Length: 132
Image (cartoon, rainbow, N blue to C red):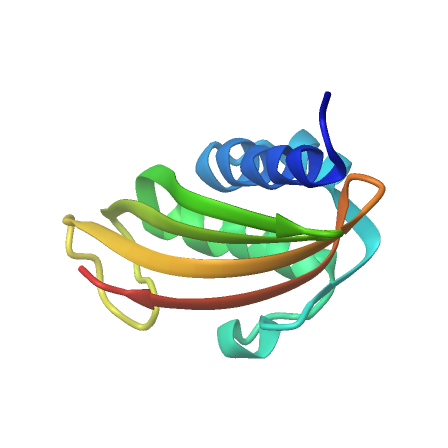
């Protein structure tokens, strides 16, 4: 039997694997609610709504990095909230975070906090840093 927390962790995993890693727009459309708010949008200098995060992943991340991989280290869920500790990596072939292409793999370690409602992202907070 799946609990709400297990179901929500599966949704967050799907978002990371299907959308962030593979760029699957259909997964994004299914997972991110129309009224979604990215509470960390200002740190990336993007709009706080759903189009801001979609454009960032598609037009910034996937244009700057090839062979994008998301590794989830752990997830903690309570109520309608999932916290994920993860790493996003890729080979930097374009400008990223104001740095010219290195053609080397870079890794960003992140902690995401996602609030879900009825299986969709409604709010997001992020802390992250590039470590290599």
